[in-house]
Length: 169
Image (cartoon, rainbow, N blue to C red; front, side, top):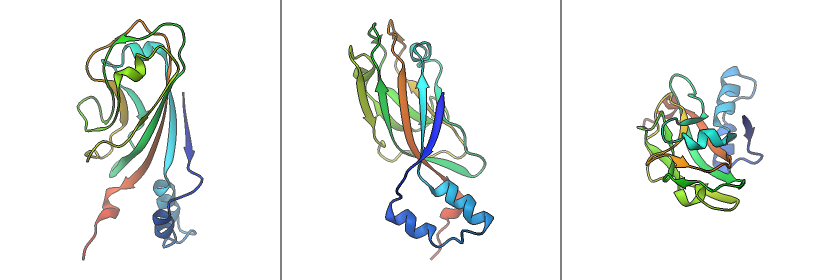
């Protein structure tokens, strides 16, 4: 299950850039929709948590040709059920698949906690954004076992068109 939303207040740098685009034009509206910081909620059911090392879960679908996803951060929430996860390792957010550049990480201790847990995944140092690739979450070091709690993830992101970043001086 996923939901998508938009932030209520834009940072002033984005507001200034958007004011340069005429609202009446189709191109302006397309840019406005992409430039707006967004969030998407994803629920990872217990069965998917247990297979997260072998089967990444897509958080944000590939945005299309010439577009990329800028990861702004994520919040993980695990409402503890009745059995604690064991084994496993750090949970990574990457582009494309398990071989993509890591843009955020939460420690295994978040998943293996014996209580309801929250964890923030900030942006990793200098992640390499990949064009037209989905954002996925997976466990890199081995499967979690025995647990039965779902994980909710809210990802904040922005879509960029790389051709718009061509700066000449």
